[in-house]
Amino acid sequence: MLVFTGIVEEVGRVVEKSDLPDAVRLRIRGPVVTSDASPGDSIAVNGVCLTVVQVLPGGEFTTDVMAETLNRSTLRHIGDRPDVNLERAVTVDRRLGGHIVQGHVDGAGQFLALDRIPGADDYWLNIGIPAELERYVIFKGSLSIEGISLTVARIEGTEVTVAIIPHTWEMTNLRSLKPGDPVNLETDIIAKYVEKMMKGESANSTLTLEKLVQQGF
Image (tube, rainbow, N blue to C red; front, side, top):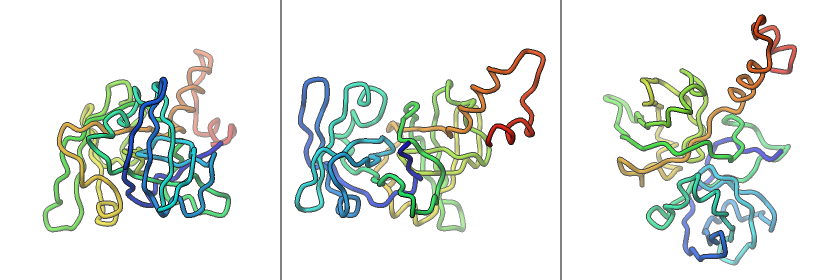
């Protein structure tokens, strides 16, 4: 299973978008992620796992985005927001610096605000999330936003707040977002497995921490 960490390696740029039958082809400039890339490799683009079709000179690569992926992610707005977060799939010799991110977008949230924290160099990022994803988001849990591994600092209904450090501000496309912009969301895969396991339990039993440990968590 291919996974990512949510640690963005560089902000790339979509330099061309062309239509294909039931898909679009993107040409993306990203010299870091293409430095060792080959056709068939996986690269997360704003948190969406995409396959490299061709590696081009000048640190560029092409990738095809199917209609279903366009409909479920913010990549359909790529013409308006050409700056994209890029990350190569994890290799066995690489540290897992963020959390397990599959590159399978669960839904689109809404960028609400990014405000400087008084007296600090950090920021509060506020986003709105779809109601159906609320049950997977917990205080101090992990959430991938635009492919960035972030920790939930506050939850108020369907509004989620996370802290953004200066490094994340500098290394991602968050600076290009405007209030109302959609953002890709992927919730923690462990929460989904736990929910499935709980549904599989009998009505007279409970899923305890001991059982989770026994089942591999």
